[in-house]
Image (cartoon, rainbow, N blue to C red):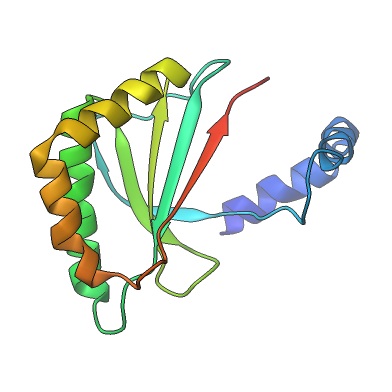
Length: 153
């Protein structure tokens, strides 16, 4: 968190960054929402920042009461399986802000077509679908959320 605070101090002292934030706010319909995820497990290699047009997916879900340990164990397993199926790195961790205990998965695709291919591969793999069914009881109903971010600059 100290490194994050130092980086933030550097950004808020940069006029070009602040101008970009001001410009970007015109495209928001609500207040911005920051996410800070501490990585607990990685599968499939090193993360590489996608180039222009790249898509990053953040998936989050909140463990059910009394299911944190089971949810983390399942989270590691699904991270390994998804990375195997899509052939790309996947990261698993927990949110340091937001709902208590919230877990998070992060993956990146080179572009929108590559993201489409990963989704198709996952949805066709019976191991993935069965694993989702297996993991569902470990999470609060309706807590799952997917955020997609596409690199435009």
